Length: 397
Image: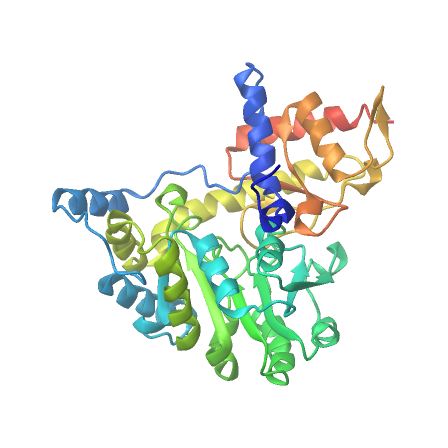
Protein backbone atom coordinates (compact mmCIF):
# COMPACT_ATOMS: atom_id res chain seq x y z
CA UNK A 1 0.00 0.00 0.00
CA UNK A 2 1.23 3.48 -0.79
CA UNK A 3 0.10 6.82 0.55
CA UNK A 4 1.74 8.74 -2.28
CA UNK A 5 -0.23 10.61 -4.93
CA UNK A 6 -0.02 9.79 -8.63
CA UNK A 7 1.18 13.37 -9.08
CA UNK A 8 4.30 12.94 -7.00
CA UNK A 9 5.00 9.49 -8.41
CA UNK A 10 5.28 11.07 -11.89
CA UNK A 11 7.55 13.88 -10.67
CA UNK A 12 11.23 13.38 -11.51
CA UNK A 13 14.03 14.21 -9.11
CA UNK A 14 16.07 17.22 -10.22
CA UNK A 15 19.05 15.74 -12.07
CA UNK A 16 21.31 18.60 -10.97
CA UNK A 17 20.51 17.89 -7.32
CA UNK A 18 20.76 14.15 -7.90
CA UNK A 19 24.27 14.39 -9.34
CA UNK A 20 25.32 16.66 -6.49
CA UNK A 21 23.96 14.12 -4.02
CA UNK A 22 25.89 11.29 -5.69
CA UNK A 23 29.10 13.30 -5.64
CA UNK A 24 28.59 14.05 -1.94
CA UNK A 25 28.18 10.34 -1.26
CA UNK A 26 31.62 9.73 -2.77
CA UNK A 27 33.08 12.64 -0.85
CA UNK A 28 31.80 11.11 2.39
CA UNK A 29 33.88 8.04 1.53
CA UNK A 30 36.99 10.21 1.36
CA UNK A 31 37.13 10.49 -2.44
CA UNK A 32 38.27 13.81 -3.91
CA UNK A 33 35.33 14.71 -6.17
CA UNK A 34 35.12 17.88 -8.25
CA UNK A 35 31.48 18.91 -8.45
CA UNK A 36 30.69 20.79 -11.67
CA UNK A 37 27.01 19.86 -11.59
CA UNK A 38 25.53 22.63 -9.45
CA UNK A 39 24.73 26.15 -10.61
CA UNK A 40 25.94 27.98 -7.54
CA UNK A 41 28.47 30.84 -7.51
CA UNK A 42 31.52 30.13 -5.37
CA UNK A 43 31.72 33.78 -4.28
CA UNK A 44 30.46 35.18 -0.99
CA UNK A 45 27.63 37.66 -0.64
CA UNK A 46 28.88 41.28 -0.89
CA UNK A 47 29.68 42.89 2.47
CA UNK A 48 27.26 45.79 2.05
CA UNK A 49 24.41 43.29 1.64
CA UNK A 50 25.45 41.33 4.73
CA UNK A 51 25.68 44.56 6.71
CA UNK A 52 22.08 45.43 5.83
CA UNK A 53 20.97 42.01 7.08
CA UNK A 54 22.88 42.43 10.34
CA UNK A 55 21.29 45.84 10.89
CA UNK A 56 17.85 44.33 10.28
CA UNK A 57 18.53 41.69 12.91
CA UNK A 58 19.78 44.26 15.42
CA UNK A 59 16.65 46.37 14.81
CA UNK A 60 14.47 43.31 15.48
CA UNK A 61 13.02 43.17 12.02
CA UNK A 62 11.84 39.64 12.73
CA UNK A 63 8.10 39.54 12.12
CA UNK A 64 5.88 38.23 9.35
CA UNK A 65 6.11 40.12 6.09
CA UNK A 66 3.34 40.88 3.57
CA UNK A 67 2.84 37.99 1.16
CA UNK A 68 4.00 39.87 -1.99
CA UNK A 69 6.90 41.55 -0.20
CA UNK A 70 7.65 44.65 1.85
CA UNK A 71 6.71 47.98 0.31
CA UNK A 72 10.29 49.29 0.24
CA UNK A 73 11.50 46.20 -1.61
CA UNK A 74 8.65 46.24 -4.13
CA UNK A 75 9.40 49.89 -4.88
CA UNK A 76 13.11 49.15 -5.23
CA UNK A 77 12.44 46.27 -7.66
CA UNK A 78 10.07 48.47 -9.67
CA UNK A 79 12.85 51.06 -10.05
CA UNK A 80 15.39 48.35 -10.87
CA UNK A 81 13.19 47.01 -13.67
CA UNK A 82 13.02 50.49 -15.19
CA UNK A 83 16.71 51.27 -14.61
CA UNK A 84 18.20 48.05 -15.93
CA UNK A 85 15.57 46.61 -18.26
CA UNK A 86 13.32 49.44 -19.45
CA UNK A 87 10.38 47.54 -17.95
CA UNK A 88 7.32 49.23 -16.50
CA UNK A 89 6.06 47.19 -13.53
CA UNK A 90 4.34 49.02 -10.70
CA UNK A 91 4.92 47.76 -7.14
CA UNK A 92 1.53 46.01 -7.13
CA UNK A 93 2.64 44.02 -10.19
CA UNK A 94 5.65 42.59 -8.33
CA UNK A 95 5.69 39.49 -6.14
CA UNK A 96 8.68 38.48 -4.04
CA UNK A 97 9.14 34.75 -3.35
CA UNK A 98 11.60 32.36 -1.75
CA UNK A 99 13.73 32.08 -4.85
CA UNK A 100 13.09 32.40 -8.59
CA UNK A 101 12.11 28.72 -8.64
CA UNK A 102 9.08 29.47 -6.47
CA UNK A 103 8.35 32.53 -8.58
CA UNK A 104 8.12 30.36 -11.69
CA UNK A 105 5.97 27.62 -10.16
CA UNK A 106 3.63 30.32 -8.82
CA UNK A 107 3.17 31.64 -12.35
CA UNK A 108 2.64 28.20 -13.85
CA UNK A 109 0.08 27.28 -11.20
CA UNK A 110 -1.69 30.61 -11.62
CA UNK A 111 -2.09 30.38 -15.40
CA UNK A 112 -1.82 26.83 -16.79
CA UNK A 113 -4.93 24.67 -16.96
CA UNK A 114 -4.99 20.91 -17.70
CA UNK A 115 -4.28 20.43 -21.39
CA UNK A 116 -2.84 23.91 -21.96
CA UNK A 117 0.27 23.86 -24.11
CA UNK A 118 3.48 25.43 -22.84
CA UNK A 119 6.29 25.98 -25.34
CA UNK A 120 9.76 25.17 -24.00
CA UNK A 121 12.82 25.81 -26.17
CA UNK A 122 15.26 22.99 -25.52
CA UNK A 123 17.67 22.86 -23.84
CA UNK A 124 15.45 24.15 -21.04
CA UNK A 125 16.11 24.50 -17.33
CA UNK A 126 15.59 21.15 -15.69
CA UNK A 127 12.56 22.15 -13.56
CA UNK A 128 10.49 23.85 -16.28
CA UNK A 129 9.09 20.68 -17.79
CA UNK A 130 8.35 19.12 -14.40
CA UNK A 131 6.50 22.24 -13.28
CA UNK A 132 4.35 22.19 -16.40
CA UNK A 133 3.55 18.50 -16.09
CA UNK A 134 2.86 18.80 -12.37
CA UNK A 135 0.10 21.26 -13.29
CA UNK A 136 -1.21 18.97 -16.04
CA UNK A 137 -0.04 21.24 -18.82
CA UNK A 138 1.35 19.83 -22.05
CA UNK A 139 5.00 20.69 -22.80
CA UNK A 140 5.69 21.52 -26.45
CA UNK A 141 9.43 21.29 -26.92
CA UNK A 142 11.29 23.15 -29.67
CA UNK A 143 14.63 21.44 -30.22
CA UNK A 144 17.84 23.37 -30.94
CA UNK A 145 21.50 22.46 -31.21
CA UNK A 146 25.03 23.85 -31.42
CA UNK A 147 24.59 25.00 -35.02
CA UNK A 148 22.11 27.71 -33.91
CA UNK A 149 23.82 28.47 -30.58
CA UNK A 150 20.85 26.69 -28.97
CA UNK A 151 18.45 29.46 -30.02
CA UNK A 152 15.08 29.02 -31.69
CA UNK A 153 14.07 30.84 -34.87
CA UNK A 154 10.88 32.81 -35.49
CA UNK A 155 9.80 30.10 -37.95
CA UNK A 156 10.18 27.39 -35.31
CA UNK A 157 8.18 29.47 -32.86
CA UNK A 158 5.39 30.11 -35.38
CA UNK A 159 5.07 26.40 -36.13
CA UNK A 160 4.92 25.49 -32.42
CA UNK A 161 2.04 27.84 -31.56
CA UNK A 162 -1.47 26.41 -31.71
CA UNK A 163 -4.86 27.59 -30.42
CA UNK A 164 -4.05 25.62 -27.23
CA UNK A 165 -0.78 27.45 -26.55
CA UNK A 166 -0.96 29.25 -23.19
CA UNK A 167 2.63 30.05 -22.34
CA UNK A 168 6.14 30.42 -23.71
CA UNK A 169 8.75 29.79 -20.99
CA UNK A 170 12.48 30.33 -21.45
CA UNK A 171 15.64 31.56 -19.73
CA UNK A 172 17.88 34.31 -21.09
CA UNK A 173 20.83 33.95 -20.59
CA UNK A 174 20.16 30.25 -20.72
CA UNK A 175 20.57 27.58 -18.15
CA UNK A 176 22.00 25.11 -19.22
CA UNK A 177 23.72 26.46 -22.34
CA UNK A 178 24.78 29.98 -21.38
CA UNK A 179 23.50 31.22 -24.76
CA UNK A 180 21.95 34.69 -24.80
CA UNK A 181 19.41 36.04 -27.27
CA UNK A 182 20.32 39.41 -28.72
CA UNK A 183 17.88 42.30 -28.92
CA UNK A 184 17.52 41.69 -32.67
CA UNK A 185 16.71 38.01 -32.12
CA UNK A 186 14.16 38.74 -29.40
CA UNK A 187 12.47 41.43 -31.47
CA UNK A 188 12.15 38.91 -34.31
CA UNK A 189 10.47 36.44 -31.94
CA UNK A 190 8.35 39.32 -30.70
CA UNK A 191 6.89 39.80 -34.18
CA UNK A 192 5.56 36.24 -33.97
CA UNK A 193 4.13 36.76 -30.50
CA UNK A 194 2.30 39.89 -31.66
CA UNK A 195 0.21 37.65 -33.94
CA UNK A 196 -0.78 35.35 -31.06
CA UNK A 197 -2.10 37.45 -28.16
CA UNK A 198 -3.24 34.40 -26.19
CA UNK A 199 0.36 33.42 -25.38
CA UNK A 200 1.79 34.52 -22.03
CA UNK A 201 5.57 35.05 -22.23
CA UNK A 202 7.62 34.08 -19.16
CA UNK A 203 11.21 35.31 -19.34
CA UNK A 204 13.55 33.92 -16.69
CA UNK A 205 16.38 36.46 -16.40
CA UNK A 206 18.12 35.20 -13.26
CA UNK A 207 21.55 35.33 -15.00
CA UNK A 208 21.08 38.94 -16.11
CA UNK A 209 24.25 40.25 -14.43
CA UNK A 210 26.46 37.43 -15.71
CA UNK A 211 26.80 38.34 -19.38
CA UNK A 212 29.93 38.69 -21.48
CA UNK A 213 28.88 40.01 -24.90
CA UNK A 214 26.89 43.19 -24.51
CA UNK A 215 23.91 44.08 -22.36
CA UNK A 216 21.03 41.68 -21.95
CA UNK A 217 17.72 42.73 -23.53
CA UNK A 218 14.39 41.99 -21.81
CA UNK A 219 11.67 40.83 -24.18
CA UNK A 220 9.05 42.46 -21.95
CA UNK A 221 10.44 45.88 -22.86
CA UNK A 222 8.89 45.55 -26.33
CA UNK A 223 5.83 47.82 -25.84
CA UNK A 224 3.32 45.48 -27.50
CA UNK A 225 4.45 42.59 -25.25
CA UNK A 226 4.75 44.43 -21.94
CA UNK A 227 1.19 43.62 -20.85
CA UNK A 228 1.60 39.88 -21.42
CA UNK A 229 5.14 39.23 -20.21
CA UNK A 230 6.17 37.89 -16.81
CA UNK A 231 9.78 38.77 -16.03
CA UNK A 232 11.47 36.52 -13.47
CA UNK A 233 14.62 37.48 -11.62
CA UNK A 234 16.32 37.16 -8.25
CA UNK A 235 19.50 37.58 -6.26
CA UNK A 236 20.96 34.06 -6.18
CA UNK A 237 23.27 34.24 -9.18
CA UNK A 238 24.22 37.87 -9.72
CA UNK A 239 24.73 38.67 -6.02
CA UNK A 240 25.91 35.22 -4.84
CA UNK A 241 22.91 34.95 -2.50
CA UNK A 242 21.74 31.40 -3.20
CA UNK A 243 21.04 30.52 0.43
CA UNK A 244 19.19 33.75 1.12
CA UNK A 245 16.30 32.53 -1.06
CA UNK A 246 14.81 35.53 -2.80
CA UNK A 247 13.34 35.70 -6.28
CA UNK A 248 10.72 37.95 -7.78
CA UNK A 249 8.46 38.56 -10.74
CA UNK A 250 7.06 41.54 -12.57
CA UNK A 251 3.78 40.49 -14.16
CA UNK A 252 0.42 41.61 -15.53
CA UNK A 253 -1.65 42.68 -12.52
CA UNK A 254 -4.07 39.74 -12.62
CA UNK A 255 -1.19 37.25 -12.79
CA UNK A 256 0.62 38.97 -9.92
CA UNK A 257 -2.52 38.93 -7.77
CA UNK A 258 -3.07 35.24 -8.53
CA UNK A 259 0.51 34.47 -7.51
CA UNK A 260 -0.05 36.32 -4.21
CA UNK A 261 -3.15 34.19 -3.61
CA UNK A 262 -1.22 30.96 -4.23
CA UNK A 263 1.81 32.00 -2.22
CA UNK A 264 -0.42 33.06 0.67
CA UNK A 265 -1.50 29.45 1.05
CA UNK A 266 1.96 27.93 0.61
CA UNK A 267 4.77 29.97 2.14
CA UNK A 268 3.43 33.47 2.78
CA UNK A 269 6.06 36.23 2.75
CA UNK A 270 9.78 35.82 2.20
CA UNK A 271 12.25 36.10 5.11
CA UNK A 272 12.15 39.55 6.71
CA UNK A 273 15.94 39.69 7.03
CA UNK A 274 16.52 38.62 3.44
CA UNK A 275 14.14 41.31 2.21
CA UNK A 276 16.02 44.07 4.03
CA UNK A 277 19.28 42.82 2.54
CA UNK A 278 17.61 42.64 -0.88
CA UNK A 279 16.63 46.31 -0.79
CA UNK A 280 20.24 47.45 -0.73
CA UNK A 281 21.26 44.86 -3.32
CA UNK A 282 18.53 45.86 -5.77
CA UNK A 283 19.16 49.58 -5.22
CA UNK A 284 22.91 49.19 -5.88
CA UNK A 285 24.47 49.96 -9.21
CA UNK A 286 24.97 46.61 -11.02
CA UNK A 287 28.66 47.47 -11.42
CA UNK A 288 29.19 46.42 -7.79
CA UNK A 289 29.20 42.79 -8.94
CA UNK A 290 31.43 43.35 -11.98
CA UNK A 291 34.33 41.58 -10.30
CA UNK A 292 32.32 38.37 -10.17
CA UNK A 293 31.27 38.74 -13.79
CA UNK A 294 34.87 39.32 -14.86
CA UNK A 295 35.99 36.21 -12.98
CA UNK A 296 33.28 34.13 -14.67
CA UNK A 297 34.35 35.54 -18.04
CA UNK A 298 37.95 34.45 -17.47
CA UNK A 299 36.81 31.02 -16.34
CA UNK A 300 34.60 30.64 -19.40
CA UNK A 301 37.48 31.42 -21.73
CA UNK A 302 39.75 29.04 -19.83
CA UNK A 303 37.25 26.19 -19.90
CA UNK A 304 36.53 26.64 -23.60
CA UNK A 305 40.24 26.63 -24.45
CA UNK A 306 40.86 23.51 -22.37
CA UNK A 307 37.85 21.62 -23.72
CA UNK A 308 39.01 22.30 -27.28
CA UNK A 309 41.93 19.98 -26.50
CA UNK A 310 39.62 17.11 -25.49
CA UNK A 311 39.11 14.91 -28.56
CA UNK A 312 35.63 14.59 -30.09
CA UNK A 313 33.92 17.06 -27.74
CA UNK A 314 32.20 20.03 -29.44
CA UNK A 315 31.31 23.23 -27.58
CA UNK A 316 29.91 26.67 -28.31
CA UNK A 317 30.95 30.07 -26.99
CA UNK A 318 28.22 31.00 -24.46
CA UNK A 319 27.42 34.66 -23.92
CA UNK A 320 26.33 34.46 -20.29
CA UNK A 321 25.65 32.46 -17.11
CA UNK A 322 28.39 30.06 -16.00
CA UNK A 323 27.83 26.88 -17.98
CA UNK A 324 29.32 25.05 -20.93
CA UNK A 325 27.07 22.57 -22.75
CA UNK A 326 29.23 20.40 -25.02
CA UNK A 327 28.13 17.67 -27.42
CA UNK A 328 29.61 14.39 -26.16
CA UNK A 329 27.65 11.98 -28.37
CA UNK A 330 30.85 10.63 -29.97
CA UNK A 331 31.42 8.59 -26.81
CA UNK A 332 28.01 6.91 -26.83
CA UNK A 333 28.46 3.20 -27.44
CA UNK A 334 32.07 3.23 -26.26
CA UNK A 335 33.28 1.07 -23.40
CA UNK A 336 35.96 0.84 -20.75
CA UNK A 337 36.26 -2.81 -19.74
CA UNK A 338 32.83 -3.93 -18.58
CA UNK A 339 31.49 -0.37 -18.45
CA UNK A 340 29.44 0.60 -21.51
CA UNK A 341 28.43 4.22 -22.10
CA UNK A 342 25.00 4.16 -23.72
CA UNK A 343 24.05 7.81 -23.27
CA UNK A 344 24.93 11.08 -21.52
CA UNK A 345 23.69 9.82 -18.17
CA UNK A 346 25.97 6.79 -18.40
CA UNK A 347 28.84 9.06 -19.42
CA UNK A 348 28.28 11.30 -16.40
CA UNK A 349 28.24 8.30 -14.08
CA UNK A 350 31.40 6.98 -15.73
CA UNK A 351 33.19 10.32 -15.28
CA UNK A 352 32.00 10.51 -11.68
CA UNK A 353 33.11 7.00 -10.77
CA UNK A 354 36.36 6.95 -12.77
CA UNK A 355 37.48 10.58 -13.00
CA UNK A 356 35.67 11.80 -9.88
CA UNK A 357 34.13 14.75 -11.73
CA UNK A 358 30.40 15.40 -11.38
CA UNK A 359 28.60 16.78 -14.46
CA UNK A 360 24.90 16.89 -15.35
CA UNK A 361 23.52 14.83 -18.26
CA UNK A 362 21.83 16.81 -21.00
CA UNK A 363 18.74 14.63 -21.07
CA UNK A 364 17.57 16.42 -17.94
CA UNK A 365 17.46 19.60 -20.05
CA UNK A 366 15.80 18.02 -23.08
CA UNK A 367 19.11 17.63 -24.97
CA UNK A 368 20.35 14.02 -24.66
CA UNK A 369 23.54 14.46 -26.74
CA UNK A 370 25.05 16.96 -24.30
CA UNK A 371 26.34 17.40 -20.75
CA UNK A 372 26.43 20.52 -18.61
CA UNK A 373 29.58 21.75 -16.89
CA UNK A 374 29.33 24.55 -14.35
CA UNK A 375 32.41 26.74 -14.16
CA UNK A 376 31.33 28.39 -10.93
CA UNK A 377 34.60 27.29 -9.39
CA UNK A 378 38.26 28.30 -9.38
CA UNK A 379 40.56 28.24 -12.40
CA UNK A 380 42.80 25.62 -10.75
CA UNK A 381 39.82 23.34 -10.16
CA UNK A 382 38.67 23.85 -13.76
CA UNK A 383 42.10 22.80 -15.03
CA UNK A 384 42.12 19.69 -12.85
CA UNK A 385 38.55 18.78 -13.79
CA UNK A 386 39.28 18.92 -17.52
CA UNK A 387 42.48 16.90 -17.01
CA UNK A 388 40.46 14.18 -15.28
CA UNK A 389 37.73 14.27 -17.93
CA UNK A 390 40.23 13.97 -20.78
CA UNK A 391 42.08 11.13 -19.06
CA UNK A 392 38.88 9.18 -18.43
CA UNK A 393 37.50 9.69 -21.93
CA UNK A 394 40.80 8.46 -23.40
CA UNK A 395 40.10 5.04 -21.85
CA UNK A 396 36.80 4.64 -23.74
CA UNK A 397 37.12 2.50 -26.85
